[in-house]
Length: 163
Image (cartoon, rainbow, N blue to C red; front, side, top):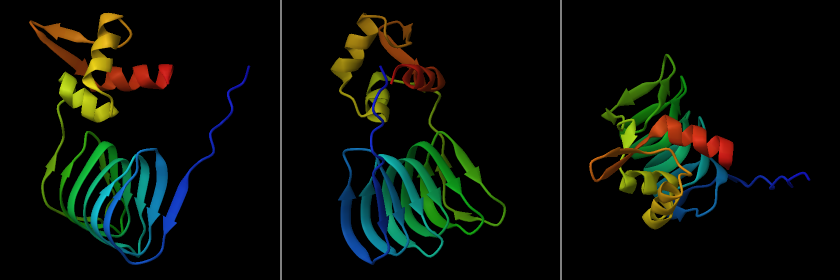
């Protein structure tokens, strides 16, 4: 039996906006205008070439081609195209910067090993569910004494095979 493909959710913003935007479900968001405030996305975020964003951004996969000032936390990847101007502190496990991009700020790349609370944030899942997966042997885990450690790459591979 074939799974029905979920309809792709796309939001293309070409206006000036101010405030907080938060998405509980994955969405492909493209900002082409001005945005000031906070932005919390799941899925893909594209900041277009003509965009001017002054915001604290949290997202999974973020691509910047315009201007961003603030903080950026990409839980999976961040790409800065050659036209990007980024004045921000960045946190991401994976970054690609094309020649010509402007980046002024700090970049931190989280450890490949995550605690249960870091994994909970990374997956947006309650810690109790992760403990359930650990106890049933469903998710790859390393034990160091009383601590549970999760390798980011192993978890990403596990997700791609199981979800």
